[in-house]
Length: 185
Image (tube, rainbow, N blue to C red):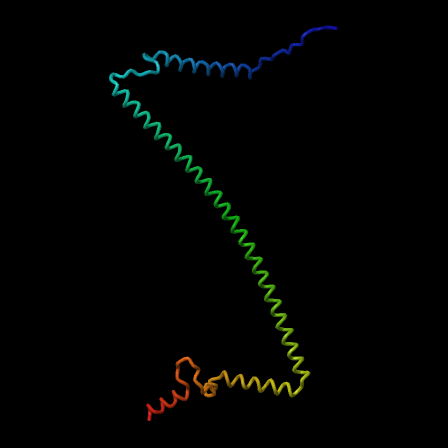
């Protein structure tokens, strides 16, 4: 058996050359930035003449950092409020759809109830007509007398049939008539 290691031949095409050029330009840029920092006279540190200058610079830096942090917090709060508003709007729309469905169901139930009531009224009237027809002339005469009595009692003439005191503190009709006659006589 032949124990040889298989090696894959790498093809150097334009992609490989482009990668090298991109990487090398990035490294050159980092090297230039690092060299600028090293070439500074004092590196990252600043030399302050007095302690007051140092304190003032630290306070300014602290205030600047606090303002930046507050601005980030406000922006974050605004994003959270916007998201909360979106969720609330979505929930409101869902509730509106649900209440609309409930209203439609209630209207349908009411319409069905009215239909059932109308059918019951029609059946009741038909049964009354059949009872009256079965009773003959006597039933018709009794019904007419009852209707005439009801008409007279509820009409404007019915006031003359109510002569007694109602007990509500108002004078009776006879007392009002007598008083009116005395005033005009």
